[in-house]
Image 1: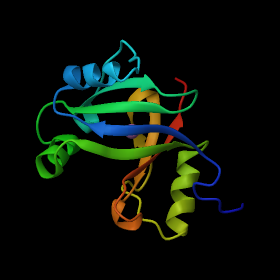
Image 2: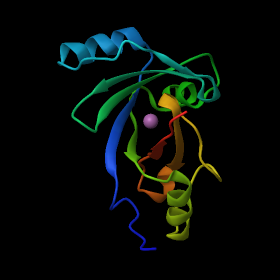
Image 3: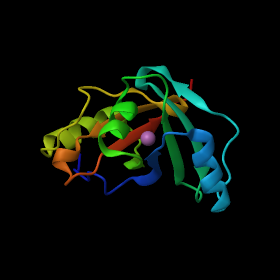
Length: 142
Ligand code: CO
């Protein structure tokens, strides 16, 4: 197996942490993006999400706290609203987790966890990427 890291993946989304989802959707619709109707609550992450396509692969993901104490709630308390993470789509997130860990990166979860949109995801810790939280995501059909 060759170690390609992020060399064989595509950008899936850029995620932005927001305090008010409807307001943020309005802002980005004014900028010309069209949001999917569905708002997905990911209870495990304490977040509600809205997606808009940017091109054939990439989306904008708005992340709004759902309840208190979740990671997005804490992030906004600490750093305010703004770009939260980049996400790359990978074929096999479990294999990519091991591959990136072997390359010396710090992965937030030992094994992939459930994310929005029926995906399995993991995150590269910003301390090993120069301050950028990077999500890796695999579409799982169920
Ligand atoms: Co994401």
